[in-house]
Amino acid sequence: MRSPKNLYLALCLLLLAAAAPAQGRDGFPLALTDALGRRVAVDAKPARVVSLSPAVTEILFAVGAGPQVAGVTEYCNYPPEAAAKAKVGGFSGITVNVEQIALLKSDLVILSGDMHQRIIELLDRLRIKSFAVEPRNFEEVYRTIGTIGRLTGNAPGAERVVAEMRAKLAQAGERRRGRGRPAVFWELSGDPLMSAGGNNFINEAITLAGGRNIFEDMAAQWPVVSQEQVMLRQPEWILAGDMAGRKIDPALYARRPGWSRIPAVRGGNVASVDPDTLYRYGPRLADAVLGISEIIFKD
Image (cartoon, rainbow, N blue to C red; front, side, top):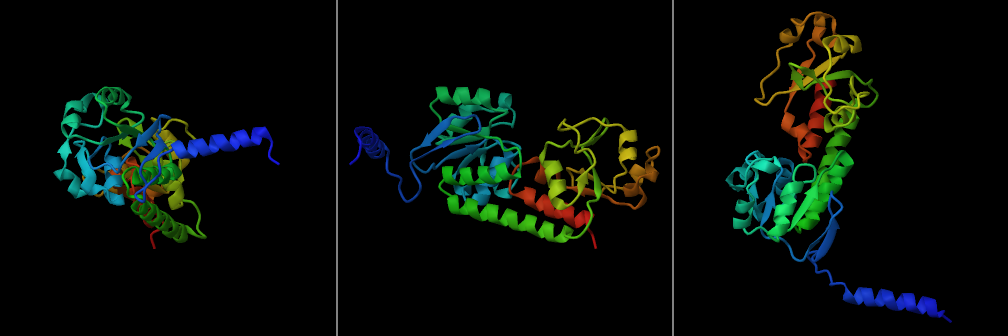
């Protein structure tokens, strides 16, 4: 015989279940917690989504939500289809045009938890729903892709994208199997000389590709380093991002005082990587890992 306490708890659970709206076959309504800890309820599949991040835009198109995208930023240049979407300003909060977002009659705005808190307050006043994302590593990127898939009614597409990313990382794993970890210097900037520390996507991508970031021990995301520090750490590869896609001339590094003794410069092991694939937390992060592994383990 059940105790009165157990009967009371069972009754409460039944009442809660009855009060909760039934989820349809399309996965709606749903409520998810965003990067700022807000519980965001979405009643129906959003028809008009605005992205305030180039990475989010890439994810939206990759999972199959491209037709739902109503607006993007001026920096959302991938995939090419994003160029046809209405522009709502730049990436930073002060450049976003909230009035334009309102004119687009958006159902949902997906934005950055770090960059757009001011925008959230303005959107709240206009009763425009927003959801913040801010993944910090590859596993969080996978979860973010899954969340965006669910938010837009494209969960199967999100699962496919994550599976494809994991498959590319597995390819990189096979390439590096049985080999050592070559030391890699990532040059973010030449003047001042800046690199990647141990707490960013570049460091993780180098590690997953099978390399060892020579400044992985630095806590700063983008540390300013000296030429002497690079020489002391003897990188076997020098990688850099090049916005124009130009090849990097190893001779430029050989002209730096003392750098001709660095193994990477001596061997001509200098290469460029598309920075958009690494600086954006989108599906192309996996392409970057695979690309780096193909560079540092060239046969």
